[in-house]
Image 1 (cartoon, rainbow over the protein chains, first blue to last red):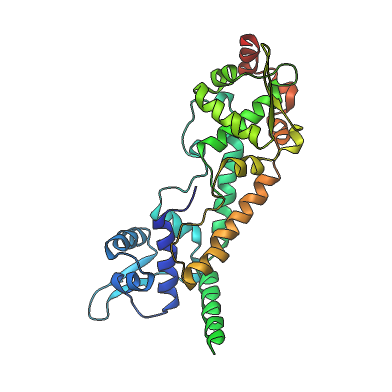
Image 2: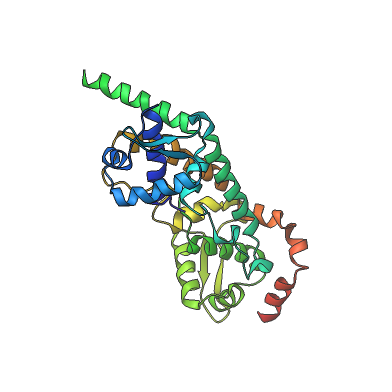
Length: 143
Length: 150
């Protein structure tokens, strides 16, 4: 159930974009900021774009920007944009041949809902706020 | 928190021992038949469970395994923790920078906490209750089948 690298970079990229406010960012800029490969991040952005979370703008100042208010974007949307499903157990997705004699299926399905509910509660804005606060504190330490 | 097939079957093994273990001991062979898994795999799970004192073994011809604790004292989270090496959904970062650390604290660990709390509150006895209690379970086909076999 560990979140994949793709899921991780999707959330990180969205925070980077949201933190930059109105300035469009190219994939290579985000890749530089997050120290990850350009090629890999291109896939992540393609998925984010398909999910309608970001749009690309052409031209000199082109790049990607977030389509919605960060307060309206939940972590569930971001993670599910790049992963088909983030399942706790296969039986919460597919039909299990042992379903008839298994007493734990309902529990795993409920766990899945719990996971989604929690991801839904955390918005992109929350993460950007925490990040800005952390950056602010970091600067204070250095002084 | 991480959830592997082994953990899921470990929970089912404990459940099986709780349901069928009141009268008989459970052998690796009968457990593997019921769960449709290889005896080697079941043995592996039983040994891990035994190592963490969830179950105990009895030697001899009529030997087998039984729960070492009461079903209401075994929570699902502790079984999972005993089976897994890693207890987090957090993705692996070689050298986490500030943003990665913030996300770990405010996103991934928060989810871990939530899942942990949820699973700690479910015991083996609760799962039996969720399925209607022992009386209802005894009416089910797979229960009778297992009883016939042993």
